Length: 455
Image (cartoon, rainbow, N blue to C red; front, side, top):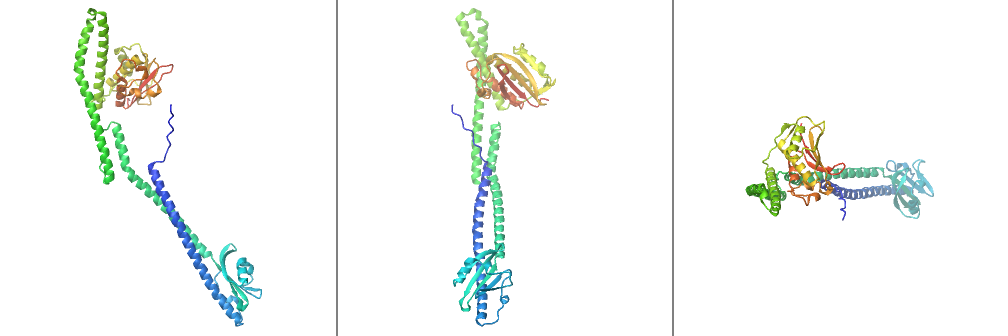
């Protein structure tokens, strides 16, 4: 036997749509944020370096002109930025602002470039703060000029831009998630209505239909579902009418046959032995046929909804004994739990039909009933049960045997209509309950039926 692989659990469609919108927004917003930040960073740093280079060359020209004119030169007179610092090197001697800075504060690569007769710029860190340094060689004055410009404001602007982009990306993702949730909810709303209508139809409400939709595509879905529901309802009603009509049409000839067979059976002593054997077969089959027609008529009335639930107050102990006596099972033990109230509200005719069918089923297929019992489940539910001494019911057949014309393996070669247990289930559903079968301790089967709201 091939084992069925376990069904893999997947996310709900609404969750998957929401995640799709969120992931799409995440990729798009992060990509846009990275590109925007890269462009902004390149622009701001380039602009800052250009400003620093222009300012440094202007200051270097001022220094060179003053040195060539052999004027008194004070580096403090240069126009420098706050937190920036210039440095002049002439004849191997460095002149800076105070004693806080020296040539060692500037990048070594930049020093090497300037000492070799070149000019350039380089970013570096000093005291854990970002700077851009510009170095200029002035061979005419036999000097080199260095100046450091702070980059902290530029880095601060970049951090602010990065924060804004991240916040914007987060807000975009949240908005996309909400949009995905709202869109999926709106798109799945017709499917929810389809599921609701299908559930009502499955539970017996064949008149359930979907409302008309404004959207053409969704309206097509609604119309297709309603057409399908109309076809299913028409077919079920046609089949129900056919079964009812056939049952009614068979009732008259069956009645005539039963009467004729009873007359022959009453004069069986006048018949030869072989004719008596044939008569026994005819009598049993006519009675079986008559029982099947009666069951079909009862089921057709239930399907048509022409049978109503008439609750009345009854004593379960007395009713169990009376039904057992009426159907020839007076010797079967009756066990009523002490929690069962003296009077319960049930449909007495349906209760009798259920118990009679369970007793007949146990007698025909279960080796005979050995016990009838009644007990309470909770405060308002009554449980009726019948134990038999048969082989029991296989687990794979326990739900199927309550279907119409279904037979368990133990009853496959026995006489019966296959409708008794289905009637038990139908009458149980009318009381808001259900019918099921269990294993009886010690062997056999235990059939149970629940009745709701009996108190």
